Image 1 (cartoon, one colour):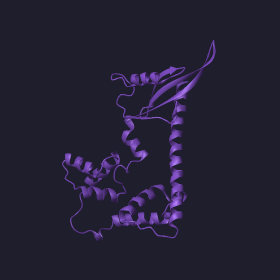
Image 2 (tube, rainbow, N blue to C red):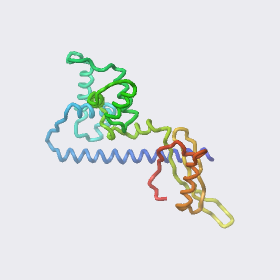
Image 3 (spheres, rainbow, N blue to C red):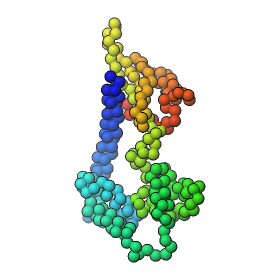
Image 4 (tube, one colour):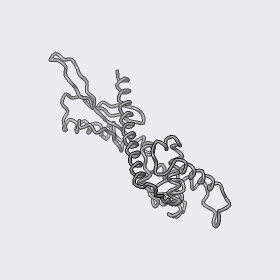
Length: 243
């Protein structure tokens, strides 16, 4: 019974996340259509950094998905920009002046940016300095833009956030259970918490008519400094149900 209940709520949580992503996608599609109507036959001008950012995202989506989005730039143009970026990356004929920093340092900068989406150029530069690497802020900025990474905090995506904070995430919700008692059917409300990284579940309490005081006490128990289920967690996911 417990396994079936857990599976049900995991599916419900996944469905909620999928619905939210679908709503965001549909809104962006409609926004793109409005932009295209406003632009008409006018041409948009993009600089190289903007082309790189759009092209890197477009390649990950693919032509079929791009066609559904109604982008302000055609899928063929976006993918052509990506091919040009790849060709330019491996073309050494135009390189002049000082050689770029070694590849391992560039990989370290990109990894810091992806794993810490709230870090800006200065924060990344400071972290590198702590590791003994002196890199200019403009170098960090150029490298991130060349790889399609936007400045913080716009760099954050839901997938990136989950990967970066998976061990610090928990979710909570309530569900009802009807119990047959001598007085008839009684509806109980169950409050539970789930640790996303391990799928462990903690049932915080059961009540017929839970109020604010009851919920506060249940949360205090979950946050107990010694054996609280939520100790070490930074983010708690919940739906918008007023209950």
